[in-house]
Length: 443
Image (cartoon, rainbow, N blue to C red):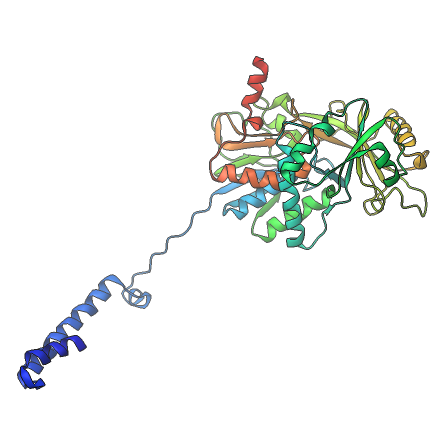
């Protein structure tokens, strides 16, 4: 308006006087412009109140959320479901007996977390990422899940391939380690008899994880962040068919989603007999917990690290863990095992063999009482690598498994990776894909 008035003043002539004629003309012009501007504003920028008065409703674009079903709430499935949820998907997680249950490969009390895997593999880098994520979630949830009491690898005359091949990848991944001679190991941990041990590889910031408790913590976080959980079993039909609508469940309901992730460990072969079948083999693994001498903390997490012993058979142990005893297990693959109904009583021969071993390597525990024992299972792939791939006949179905006794520690890193692959429609590392089995067969 100031510009229009100034223009009128200039047109009025010299002396700066406005005539009545020019003033009326300027006011008329300004009124017309104001009316036009008002109408234009109404045309382009209607308010919500105006639309309401006119009977119209403002149009809001609602975001769409992909519905993804994750079958299996163990280390692989639980973490995958949580990261899918955080990427904006609507996620339904189901499990037959609940997270960390005694039949699951992710059940039990503890698991080792370490970075040493030998040469030419991706797991050291994955372990480094997993350690970072375990720490972040401990802080985020305010609970203790990882116990970095150290991991000692005892390299013997039998085979030190893992120990020799690990340092370069540990350095690259930023996982601290020390190479120790037998003479350096002895004074640090005098309770260990180092007979046959040539040297040691020590990871001071590695250690053990709680297993069952961690699986339950992941589910609690998943629910708190808006996930949906259902305890039910998928009724094994022919999931290999080229087309199927939803999953029939044991409670007579049907679960229908846009994408599916099957992370149900040793049961994958039953659900996908053609695609997986014997490529997932469940094996029986005996685990023993021995009692330590009264008032003696030399065999607890206060004085001992997690350890692995590469003798003729690879044996490992986890000391302590809230008074549960001195855990010892043979990593050698056992016989075939039915994870649903198999007998979970340890064998007398297995107990005898383990007593002999403990008495040799830890003389102070000779004839120690057996406090607990249990039979768990590994779910092994033929080459011990993970299986992460789409089903060959279903683009919207992912298969995730093959933990092979070392998968638990990688849970958060693997879940983060699988969520990215599913949501961004990417392909997994060829090392994890199903096509490798055809290549291996051809060779």
